Image 1 (cartoon, helix red, strand yellow):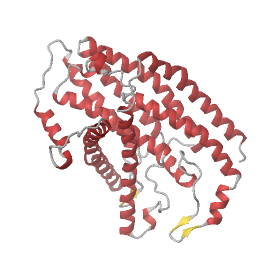
Image 2: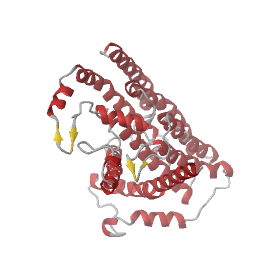
Image 3: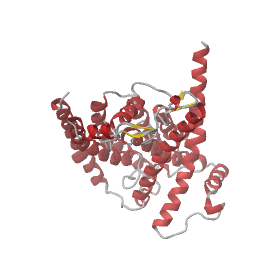
Image 4: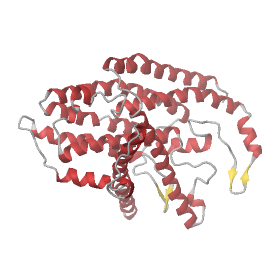
Amino acid sequence: MTDILFQLLWALVKAVGLVFVIILPMVSYTVYAERRVSAMIQDRLGPNRVGPMGLLQPIADAVKLLLKEDFTPASVNKFYYWLAPACAMAPSLMALAVVPFGSNWFGQQMVVANVDIGVLWVFAVSSLGVYGIVLAGWSSNSKYPFLGGIRSSSQMISYELSLGLSVIPIFLICGTLNLPAIVQYQIQNGWLIAPIWIKGISFSGIDFSLLASSIFSVNALVKILLWIPLFISFIVFMVSMFAETNRLPFDLPESETELVGGYHTEYSSMKFALFFLGEYAAMITGSAVIVTLFFGAWHIPFLPTDPQQLPFWWGVLLGLLHIVAFFVKVSILLFFFIWVRWTLPRFRYDQLMRLGWYFFFEIALANILLVALILAFAPK
């Protein structure tokens, strides 16, 4: 019983630390980063008044949103109108529970819930976020939010298929749905985005005999063949994640030039802020899943992977370094999300549907067949 309580306490500490110490501040400063990057792209200054280089701007924005008048239009369905922002925000945070954001720290695995169906949990929970958007559009009793909600639901259905099909090759290769196990596979066999990896690294240096045997072998040839469908999976998954998070060029549910503000047109104050935070939390969650599936999660090349094999304080330092490495990779992907938003124009709605149903769906299915054929004829 004591051991169970200890594990529950550690799970609570990891959950609270992940959400309140890392993710929520990261959401705030992702908004700041978006404003600064967009300003650089458009040759503007961006926020530069509140604090040095405008670094306190997210705090000022939070205070403003907290103090603004919370106006509820008379024509809305109040229960669902109030429920929708929470439904849009919560799923993104829940999905992070199964993502390994580090190796071991103080003897504890850096994942809130190590479950065997981690990827299915991510898809099942993150897809619930669309209910918040649909509820907001319907309960507002206004035409523009309603159109935004309808667009979001059809967009989610279209790209959820290609998103799910694109990760099946990973399951076929790794043989598991457990996210920490997928990370361990990448540590042993190379990141899935770059499957040829140096073997035999230790504190004493690189064992070149192992390096040569890992590159010039039948196993290496199979890895190179598998890299082609894995790269296709990465492209399909990445683009589908843009659509799932309603980011440009897939932001049809908001589409300011057509729908004023889309599903959150009738919202103000903290209810609007929850939609805003939900979008950026979904971006962080999507980036974390991409890093975990394709970029080795917290793994750093040429460094030890098990802090428990080192002296205590060196192990603590290495565990912290793994956590930092994970969020650095996530931050690089977030920069890519922001860069794409301020570079590409928005798709037309028919182009959005055509890309999802006529291209990505078929490409993802053909990709599964390609991986199955390579694995079937590869030497055991």
